[in-house]
Image (cartoon, rainbow, N blue to C red):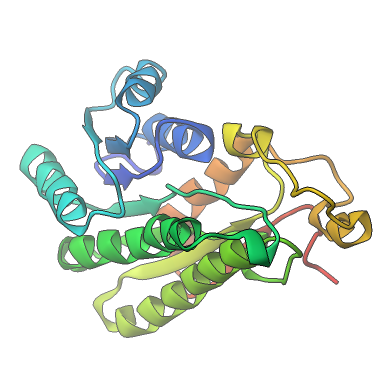
Length: 249
């Protein structure tokens, strides 16, 4: 029996990278899926890679829109009648000198990386209480340590970690588990397009690279699946690093 057979998962950011890998891994473990992303064409590519026996629903929307988040959960419930696993993976990154970060850039990171997680959790929690489900929020090593030129990103990911811990306590009596995963460097389109700001101090940047080569999206997805499975029934309120030792010191 597949670990997640009979379960329904909703994955944001499912169009590429960790989100796509997570959707594939969840489907391989028997889950039915609502896959979400801003990019509709990327979603269609993801669906092509899902297990043939997995029932799927795709919905393209912006997680920074609270009404759209509500509607995505409603569509999931209309299609499948339940929701067991919420994976908040949609996110954006910005590496820049503090003085050059614009109001719009700051707000965009807050809207997508933090508010989007809040909106999705708020929308999904009534259904997750019914199913005694699980929330897995994608944070970052940047939420566990300060990083030069990453102040805005670090702030949003630290917020995701503390938000997750708070929800874990608030809904423990409802048997809803909430955890945050904190990847370091991962080989995804997001990191492939990552660039350091002009005149960045290389010594300050050295802490961003772990001793090992970067992780593959499938390695992060495997941890998502584990946290969503019955095997992780005693894990909640955790911020789990998967960063090659980057934040161990």
